[in-house]
Length: 174
Image (cartoon, rainbow, N blue to C red):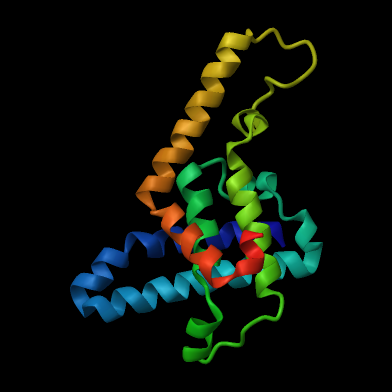
């Protein structure tokens, strides 16, 4: 399942690059339709993963790996899921999965935990036993990781989506 999902990410990324092009050619409605389509792809991608592997297995590490350790990509995937609301799905005549609140809660938790210190070293061998990396260097790595996440969150307006999700899904905010 992971390999197929990984292949899909290339197409989603390409579509994100064409959002502005869609807006210039088809106006706001073209951009809105493309954004909604991408949100639903992200949602159903994680629904499939959650149903196949269990929602408890969708963690910050899984989100980070699916995004290939790219802060912007990780937050865009999370934003896509958190932006999918039952009202918009019903308007588009797309079935609303009954486990959508569980998915929202899971993705919210995974995305907000990306700032954890171990995530800065997730794709490195610096955590192996016998590593002599000084603590000052580790502190710099953690600060850089968090700065990348902050920049990505600002670029994709992630916290706006988090606040909207918290209002729409009280059980997610709890």
